[in-house]
Length: 199
Image 1 (cartoon, rainbow, N blue to C red):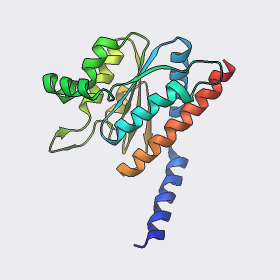
Image 2 (image 1 turned 90 degrees about the horizontal axis):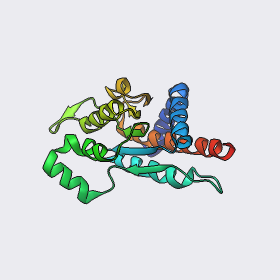
Image 3 (image 1 turned 45 degrees about the horizontal axis):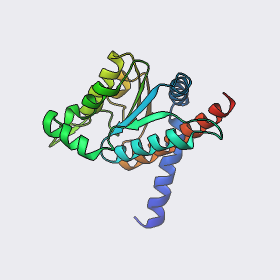
């Protein structure tokens, strides 16, 4: 396969995803986050691997990019940004409890947790099941009276059953799912910026 064929195929896949991703699910995410901003609730984000960088990006944009002139953005924190804390928690409590242990200290009723995962907690490899730390944190957030948002791919995995709103990128490709999660992140942030400006 030459470069042009590969590039065209990748971009064609992006077009297909754009046409098939659920607009209703994206709207649910926007509504949950806008309500959290109105009520001055905290928004937490987290992910593993490439999704961790998307979680960091989301937190940055919710704090700054979403805020129109003269208004504050979200109270927000990414749970995979404090590396010494993460390593201490993994060392003492195991990887499955990485995000749960942080939420036990910080999460309050009405807060929102955003979890980002390519497989949505499905699939496994030599490290056993993927992203169980995300699923555990989502269950805790719901039990504590908060809202949960998921971004996943493939068939959505268990995450789509747990989350109050879950946007599934319908692709069986990690690069495509991770790429489109960033597209969704920017779509949501800049729609929220418009809503904040008129609120």
